[in-house]
Image (cartoon, rainbow, N blue to C red; front, side, top):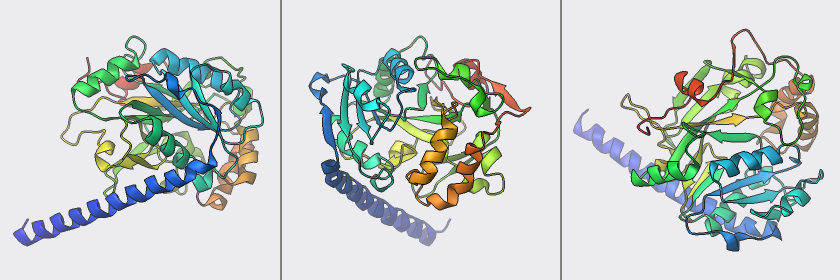
Length: 347
């Protein structure tokens, strides 16, 4: 590369860093303004200790999923949950308000216009998450990582702290049943992976996004079944769900990417592997068909919702996502052996 080309590249990088710095400031200001949309239901943040691990989530009508979701993350080592209820009508708000380790806010404002709940959570992270390890996860996502069954989250976060690492990446892995979605019964409190024991093991495409330097991962049963003709429209599966938070940080697109960009560097480019986890995605429980009909009408889950009508229609028809290439879930060691998570240098 010539000297002039190096100068142009350096100038372009400085320009991009400047624009992203201002974008981050705009996102933080936006979240600060959106704080007025939140009403306190139960504020127990006074219980948060200096070393507490926090979990942030926006939920709506998740009463069936929440008992196991909470218990799973409590077992991992989450100390306190900060949750925004977005107009639930199934008893979710009342259930969460009774939990002694949950601080709860309510809003009836638009999920889509809050950047799919990110604005609300960013405000709570600014106010309560500074200098804490913060997990951001939806009610249909279960975090697992190497040795999670024997080493709790504090062991992982202390190891990350010693290495000076402030973020931890995970693949969102769609879980599904064999047969139509409605045929796998599920009751509150049960492990959803027993109802959804299958996943796609190898049909993933990975790109590095130049702008935010995050990994854009697509594939799994949604790409295979609903976006086969337009795979680039399939949902992205890479996330940065666990971050040692700073009040100056902001997620850009759900937990798929964050600013500053260094938080997205949860991968190695030199042939090695960084320690990473998996978010077991339990979207496809039996009630997904009913929820899809509701969400199609609400148009709150995608920026261009009309483009996803076919996706919702396919879910409403109660599909069978299983195929001969599906893999039955056995545990984290299996996922590591398949290259879907890595212990890296954490032994």
